[in-house]
Length: 219
Ligand code: TMP
Image (cartoon, rainbow, N blue to C red):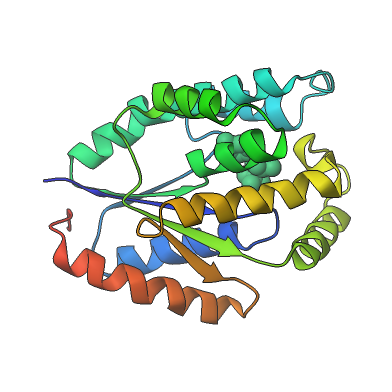
């Protein structure tokens, strides 16, 4: 039995980290065995890499190339240590970010060569690809507003990637649009300017028929 692999994507403050757990709760209520992860991270090795990428005091000089490789080192570990075994058991995997983030942030945002970025992703994930991806799309101004209010509640947590300028985040948004246009079947664009409940319903309308028709593991 093959499981189901769902990922969430979007810019900072798009609501992914609210919606992913809501979907997990709903799937569990329906009796599915669900595992939830975030990227970078999700394994002990990946969480250390996450700290290096985002919060470490030693990360200020990190190059775009090192960032690309560290994101994908974390991913290579997550895929082999947990995602593949769980999918093989027929479970549902929900992941807060996956390789579309690399296309958007390192490819478009940092402007690394897109073919090289694709090759690095290919090495990290091999044949393990999401069945379905939700791209939670918000206008950049709303993303910035939500990010500012989050930073105001946690001013002591520094995040290297969030320190990038507006032009970087404009390119990231373009990167997501390009990824979604290239794979319209896998990447579902969700208007994430609405309420939490509205966005949750839009997501469930797409997931419910999928889990109903697939033989995923249930208790
Ligand atoms: P988040 O978990 O709060 O979304 O933080 C993850 C950060 O890492 C976010 O700024 C996006 C960034 N990121 C990349 O730049 N490339 C990637 O491949 C991934 C997974 C995340």
